[in-house]
Amino acid sequence: MTYLQDCINYTRVNEGGVSNNPHDRGGLTNLGITLDTLREASAKVHGHSFDKNHDGKIDGVDLLSLNDDDVLWIVKECGFWSPLLDRLPKGVAIKTFDLRFNCGITSGTKLLQKAIDRVLADAVVVDGVIGTETVAMANKIDQYVLYRVLVDTAIKHYVAIAKYDASQIGNLNGWINRAKRVPYPDPNFALSIA
Image (cartoon, rainbow, N blue to C red; front, top):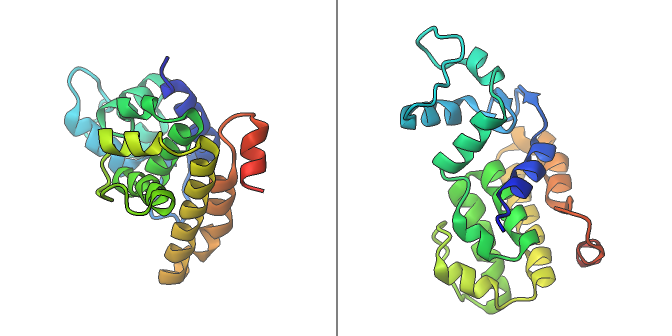
């Protein structure tokens, strides 16, 4: 069984629909996809058109016209999804996928690796790549412990961003709420981050 659709559903709730917050570095976003990501996806396209209005350019009009099939294609082809996520505990996989969306693929993966290292004392290389070693070390940790440490690591990351760049302070509460939002109903998640 794959967690892919669970990951997409969870991230969609966090991302919402259309957003154009002037303080969000991603700029215009639809279904969690930024215009830069859409342009990157368009460069990789083989038989999938993102030029929805057929004007020869990828712009905000095209971004606002994305559908679920487009998002699924982008998630798979632009690296947000890794089949190795299916080998992690489900809650950790969903949270890591969401962090890859929110923080960038490499940074989101590094947050998972930092969480593993906080529990197992430098057990993995923090390189931003979900590989077999990251998966193996993650699975040595109780899933609720790893989940709690991953959430805490994400919150510390968000606080550091806001401290470094004062223009991002307005996003901090939303980021923290997002980090604390549990991926699916499980009383153990609620207890682990209380």
